[in-house]
Amino acid sequence: MLTEIVMPQMGESVAEGTVVTWLKKVGEAVAKDEPLVAISTDKVDVEIPSPAAGILAQIVVQEGGTAPVEAVLAYIDEASHAGAVPPGRPVVEQPEGIQAAAPATRWYSPAVLELAKEHGVDLTQVKGTGAEGRVTRKDLLDFIAMRSQATAATPRVSPAPPAPPAEEQILPISPMRKAIAEHMVRSKQTAPHVTQIHEADMTAVDKYRQAHHETFLKRTGITLTFLPFVVKATVDGLRAYPLMNASYTREGIIVKQAINIGIAVSLEEGLIVPVLRDADKKSFLTLATQMTDLAARARDKRLSLEEVYQGTFTVNNFGAFGTLIGTPIIVQPQAAILGFGKVVRRPVVIDDAVAIRSMAYLCLSYDHRLIDGAYAGAFLNHVQATLERFDFSIVR
Image 1 (spheres, helix red, strand yellow):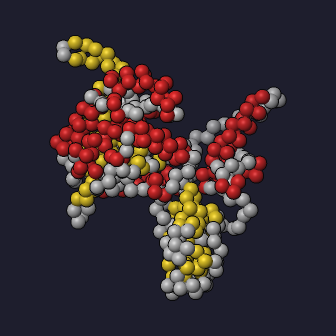
Image 2 (tube, rainbow, N blue to C red):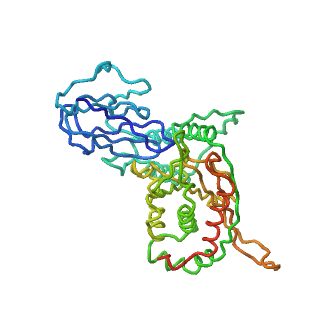
Image 3 (cartoon, rainbow, N blue to C red):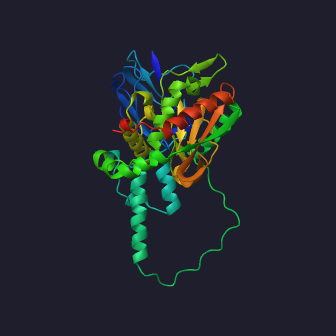
């Protein structure tokens, strides 16, 4: 019996992956769940385990080859008949959409190649710190920074006049940007989006952060930001209003039992949404620590497959970039996404008096097929009230 090894879906906006290394050779035995192949995308680098025990019968996509999601990468012969292939899939052919690559002594991810081309870097001059000496994006950025410093320190002699600016410039669309674009269009076409906005008084949270910032950093090693407070309040809201943690299907509304919060992380190439699994079962400190860890590893492309998949609700902290109000697009097939705007100190009328308060907007976009305005408003009221009357005894 032959079992297909296919390119997995590694996040909603990932359309293809590149084979970095085959950890087994054709004819070698492989155990079930044993790491079989290392895959790289614009977002994550992961090792794919074998779904069955047997013999690696055929490799369809060689090292350095790029294949779309669900494409066949190899076959495992569970009956140990090495070399067998299923009918209709001759060895000499590759599935449509797969880019063959000539064997190379050194492999580079698509993101590294694109960045090196942009900055005119000879990658053979860059020392890699990744697995088996691979050059990571951080290695390349460090090299570019060092080169820029050295260039700045060297006197320039008779620089050539700059070339006249072009009237138009056509930039290539990266696989990540193409996948994001397709997902955004599909989300808008699938779900009728409605956005509701509430205003939250973050003064108590802001004062607590300022008072405990240094001690929290010394105790935990992480910065105390607004985001874990928002996520904790969101989790409480999802418990109280479970339809916000659901998906609309033709068969019916699927209410998710697990609360898996996706945290939008901005990368230079686009956006990735790592997932905090079972967020309702975790303490404030665990949530804050895991968010910091996921964001750091997302930027270094060190997330595992499980960490970018099966989110049930997403939080987007666009206030970190100075944005006050936004209308975020739902991550399909989720029911909603909550955007958190910048916290701003401004005058607010309270009990017929003007006071200076730390205010922020909560922007909820939701699927109007299963959520109505009253339900969304009740959810936002719950999140808002939780933030304004936050129980700081749990911050430990």
